[in-house]
Length: 168
Image (cartoon, rainbow, N blue to C red; front, top):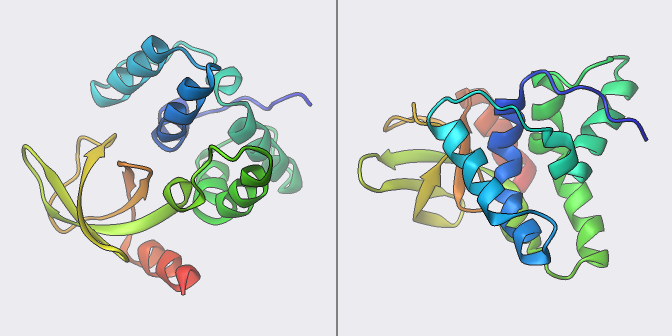
C-alpha cells in the first residue's frame, strides 16, 4: 500500500513517538533515532526524516482514513481522527498479534494539567500522575490527550469531554 504524504509531521510524531518505545524494544526503531525525534519536537526543529517508514502502522491507518474521506494527504484532521477516535480499535487488533503491546497504556486518553514545571502532573480517569510532554506550550488547567507516558497535545474542552464519553 502506498502511504499518502503526511502534511504535519510534528503533529503526527506527537502521537506516534510514544509508540516508539515498543518499536525500540522490538528492534525495529533505533533508540538514537527516537531520541532525535523527541528532541526535534520539543525544541521545534525541522523534521527531515521519513516518519511514515518509522511508524508504518499509524501511517497506513491514516492513509486508509484519508482515502475513505476522499483526501490525497494525511492532514491534521486525519491524524487526530486516527489517534483520538480509531486508534483503540487498531491497538486491540494488533495486541492479538503482538503481545508486547499494552492496550491500556497505548490508548489515547484525555486529561487535565494540574501542575507544570519540573514535573507535569495530570488528572486522568485513573487519577493523578506525573507525565512527560511533547507539547512545550502546556499550561496548568489545559485539557490534553495522553499516549503512554506523554502529553501529545492540548485539546479543546469539548474534545476532552467527547473522549471521556467514549471511555464510559
